[in-house]
Length: 179
Ligand code: KMT
Ligand code: NI
Image: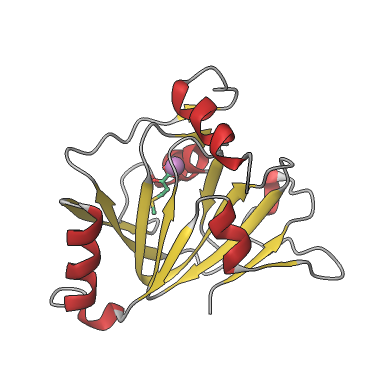
């Protein structure tokens, strides 16, 4: 199962370390759902022909997809991009990522603005809702390959925090109210 936990305060020097609290404070898939974060486990060995992935893409309308390999030898402007990915930001659309190989962390803010770290590895597909503050880092293995999915034409623009005046942010925080 997917593992997630509350983080200790993370100096940006070693963002790739797990940063668990001591004692560990796990976060369940149910807790993540309440934040609008959803997860599927798929067989990444067959991603090119996987009927389960096809079904999800059909149901959710994920018409666009590409594959990004994040490694210092394969990603142009690797250092710069990783630095950008780790800046706290939001998007106007859902962020949908399917890990095909390697490992990565997605950090998301909970309702009380605490960081939750989500450990993703091969076979994990995650959706982060539009308007959630989040960031991304590799772990100490320094490599992942991920499928990026999108509804329609992709818009990758990230708005760094503070971005509280966007409609999408207001809508997202409103959606957390009764849950
Ligand atoms: C983002 O916006 O946080 C990202 O695109 C993360 C890197 S893609 C695996
Ligand atoms: Ni993002």
